[in-house]
Image (cartoon, rainbow, N blue to C red):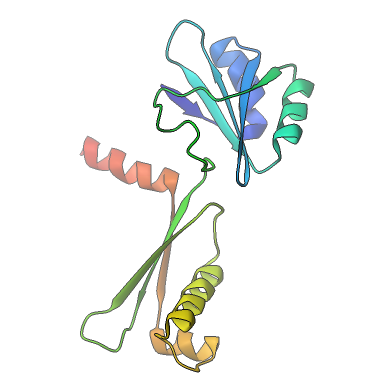
Length: 165
C-alpha cells in the first residue's frame, strides 16, 4: 500500500506513519522521487519534488532523515520508469471542418495551462501541414477548441469511482 504525499510533508509522514527515518531518492528528468517503506510490511510513503536530488537530500537531512539512492516500490514496473509522480493528460476537441470534430491528446509532466496546450497543438499542426499560413489567434477562432486537462490523480479517481459504483 502506497501513500503519496506532498514532498514538504514527506519526512513528517514517513516518521509518523512508518516510524522510519531512512528515505530513498531517485533522480527523475524533472525532479526527484522520495520513498520510505516500513521494514516488516508493505506500507510505502512516496513523494515527488521538482528539486534536484541534492536539494531533496539536503531537505530530508535537515528534517532528520538519512537519504540513500534508490526507490521503494511494490510494483517493479514503477521503479526506474523515468517519470515524475505528476502527469497530466491534455485533450482538445476542435472543429475540424469535417462532419466529426477532431480530437487531439498529449501528456505533460507539469500541469500545463490551456494556452500552452493550444500552442502545442497549433505548433504540431503547423509542422505537419494541417494548418497553413494562419496566425495562432485565427487558428483558435476557426478551431473553436475545447481543452480538458486531467492529472494522474484525477484519472485514478475516475477509475476508483467506476469500481465503487
